[in-house]
Length: 158
Image 1: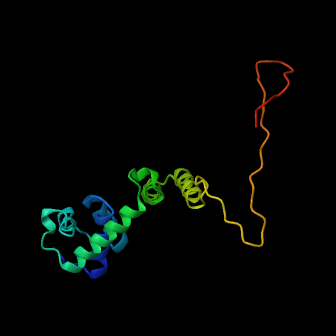
Image 2 (image 1 turned 120 degrees about the horizontal axis):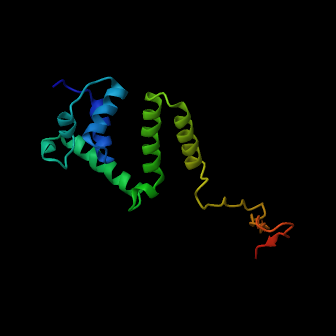
Image 3 (image 1 turned 30 degrees about the vertical axis):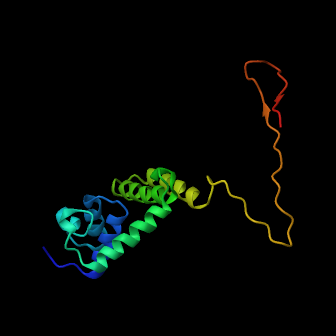
């Protein structure tokens, strides 16, 4: 078992604190640092596991701080949280690229752009003191029943 540099250890500890599995972390270390580490070696950096009971205090502190921040950022349901979804999309894009599936990778990247662009978040910009407040306008929707010939559009209430 090779001695790991501090930056690799920090990467491992933080990934474990974010609930990545030892296998996922081992693969990520290989990709990021080109260093082979076993799942067992990774598990020694998790203070919540029996293998990590002798972990140095500085790494335990880093783990606890990272885990605390991660939990604060995530809601009770991880999939409902942007950070969780973006991490998953990142893994999916990497997998799609290794499979040489560029179309899928581009679709995932588009979804990630939507996530970071607040497309699915119900937020409105705060108006400056000098500007008029932004008031949403009503949109008229016309519904046409394709089964009726020459049907007049039905107007939705609103």
